[in-house]
Structures are given as C-alpha cells and as structure tokens.
Length: 426
Ligand SMILES: [Zn+2]
Image (cartoon, rainbow, N blue to C red; front, side, top):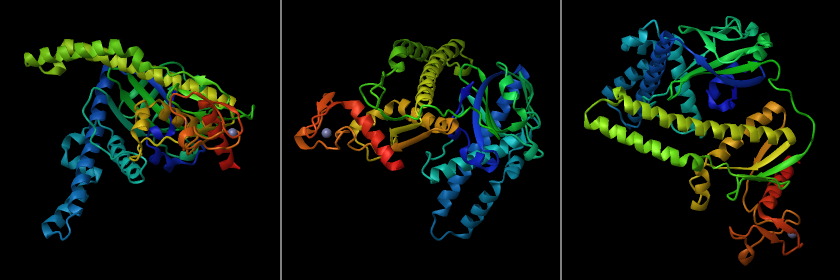
C-alpha cells in the first residue's frame, strides 16, 4: 500500500464531498483480464480525448475573446464553441464516444479534472493545463457514485469492494487486487470511496488508486514526545536537523546512471534500426523490449526515492510534534543560479509535501518559514554575520564573533529555522 498526498489527485473536486473529516489515499496493484485491459484502454483513450478536446476549445475561446470589436461571425463562433463544451453534445459530435463500453462518468470526469486544473492554474498552484500526450502509460479517473452518501460505505457505491481481494467498477467489472484489504474492510461502514484512478504504467502493470474519506482517523494520532525540530535542507547532505542529526543524500540517480545510460543507448540503436527499415516503432519487437527495460529502470529509481522519502518523513513525524522547515519556492523566477541547481532534485519538494499531509494525518504540526540568512545568523544570540564575516560555502564550522559560541553550519541553520517557527506560533 502506498500513501498518496491529498493534492495529487483532483484536490478541488474532492472538496465537494467534504462531509467526512478524514481523507486518505491508497494505491494497489490490480490484475485485469485481457478483456478488461481492452476496456481500460478504451476508457483511458476516451478520457484523454475529452480532456484534450476541451482544452482545444478553451484555447480557441481564449483567443477569440481577445478580439476587441468582434464581428458577428466571431460572435456566432464563440456561441457555437461554448455550446460544444457540453459533454453530451461532445458525444453527439464524436460518435465513438457513444460506445457503450465507455463509461459516461469517465467523460464527465475528464471535464471536471480539466476545470480543476484550470482553477489551480488561475490560483497559481499549478502549471497551465496542457494536452495529454498519447503514451505507453494510460490513466483515467472516475468518481464513485452513491445513492445516499450518508449511508455510503466501501461496499455499496458504484465502485465497491465485493470481498477482501476484489473490487467492482462500472463497465470494467470485477477486478482482483493485490494483497488482502482486510484491515480496510474491517471499518467498511465508516469509509467511503470518492475518486479512483486506473493506471497502466510503461511496463504494463495496472494500478488502482483510491481516494477515501472516513468518519474516523485512518491512523492513530501520535501524542507522546512533545519535541519540536527544525530542518535545514542543504547541499552537503540531504538534510540536517536542529538536534544535529544528518541524513546523507541517497544519490539514486548516480547509482543507476551507468546501467541507465547503457540501456538508453541500446534503445536509441534499436530505434535507429527500426527507422532504417521503415518499420513502425509500435510493432518493432526489439525496440519495444528495450523500451520496457528502460522503463523498468526508471520505475525502480522512482520507487527507491519514494520509499526513502516516505520512511524519512514518517520517522521525523513519529519523534517530533512540531516540525519547521524552510520554504522552497520551486517556481520563483527571481531565484538565483546557485539556488536553482538545488531544485533539480525534486526530493526536497516531495519530502515537504509528505510532511505536510502526514502531519495532518498524525495530528502533528508542520510549518515552513522564510529561510533568508538562517545560515549567517547565530542561533544563540541572534548576531548576523555581515561583510567580510559572511560564511563561504566551504566553511562548515564557525565561532560567533559576538557571543563566542561554536556552531556547526547546518545545525545552526536548522536551529534558526526552528526558532523562527516557534516565534511565528507564539
Ligand atoms: Zn552569537
């Protein structure tokens, strides 16, 4: 079971179902039959088509609205386009969408997801929506329907568990899931499914991600050890805490890089051979074999990173009731070059996201503070180094010229971050 951050899937849409206070996500492997694989493919294609169609129409509308004194022709065009945004009309215009093997809710969900994206973009929380590309991975989302949401459970929605090993979905039918969901089903009456995502990855493994809401917490709140901690994310290692503990960088990229480069070289070679003989890549067997090999390495890398971050974030929250970290502004255009190279490794951003949602889950507090000059400030007396005194990147330890305290560079920064957090909360 992999926990998903709340904001990963359809955050805005979720809030419509906000009756139940606790939210949780799980991702499980599923084993569809060949017939079901075809159905999943068809629905994923329909989802992508509707999403892209919607995006294309919205883009055209945006352009047309920019015309200052539009002639009548443009007016009628705008009206026509606005009408065709309706998903029922879209099914009329594109007859293949009326296929009974395509779930009507999938089409609707594509439009809802598009609007969520658009909204997130306008609020500055996400990038501008873009066309979904055709690729070796498939994905579509589906909301769970209940007759009476008040009495909804894991077993009586349109997406439901039939037993500890099987889930039924509309159109797709009964699917076997990996492992036993006995623990989840032991509280079936208290938990509802809001949204599911069906995915196929590049090596043809199928997964089902479930967004759940519940009346009771999914995990027990931890309430011992009231210890605050500050975290400094730095370049020398992965992170340093205010208690002086350091976590070394895992360097997953570097570990895999040789094998990965070799595999990509072979892939390029297979592509070259296929193109020379004018064979389409989709039917070139050696190319496809090598593509799967590259995809496997990438997935392995991703899973290693994910495991490392999940374990680290849980461990931090288990032992501390207040966690303060620095703000990472990944998309700040004003950032300088020295900072920007740090953001090439997305590990820190994922870690902070995990800390944020897990803190809620465990009943802990997590906040971020502005990290300006935390390295150059004495955490003991508050003296700020300036001019010639400023630490260069090489200096790992220093004495405060004002109170003569000995400092380890990163631990001191972490302590300053913690102090700022405590001031803010006070
Ligand atoms: Zn000092």
